[in-house]
Structures are given as structure tokens and as C-alpha cells.
Length: 108
Image (cartoon, rainbow, N blue to C red; front, top):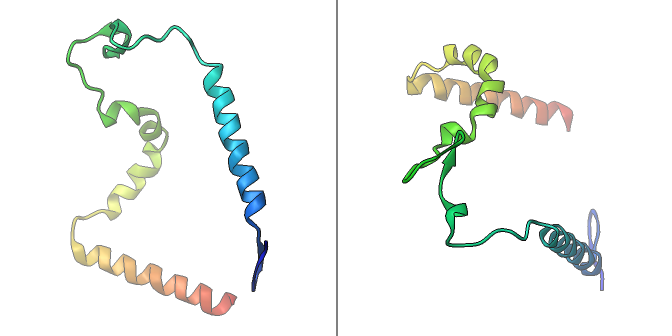
């Protein structure tokens, strides 16, 4: 069974085989995991910075710390453009749309 389109073909059997391969690979990775995990034990308690904390929550600033630190120089340069005035954001949107339109018009 093949579905012909204007840009090639689509056959469900290769996609089904690829999906089965992903499921098999996922199962293999899962089966090689640690067997020592036990639900309802001390293993499920929060652990932050080497200390066990009762009722602690890990916020987004902790989860994305490396990402934020890596982009800090770039974000500091962009901070000057963020004035909080909606007119500035609309102007940037119009400029970017005009550039995208010109690229699409001249490139196509």
C-alpha cells in the first residue's frame, strides 16, 4: 500500500517498522536499568544539594541553571531591547515579518 503525493510517497510499513524499533530500543534501555529501586521507601524523598529535605521542592531555576548560565552573555545583550512597552514588541514583529516576507518573495 503506497500513498502517492506530489512530493514522494508514504508507505505505512516502514513507519510501523521504525515505531517497533523505537519501542524495542526503549524496552532494552529500560530493562538494563537499576533493579534496586523500591517505591514507598526513602529513595523517593527529595534530595537537593547533598541533603535530604522534607517537603522540599526543586524549582525551575534549579533545573535549568546550566542552560541559563550558558546563555547569560547572550541574554544580557538582549535585555536592552526589552523595554516592556507593547509598541516596541509590535514594531519588532512587523520588522521580522517584513524580513521573512522579503526572503520568501526573493528566494522562491
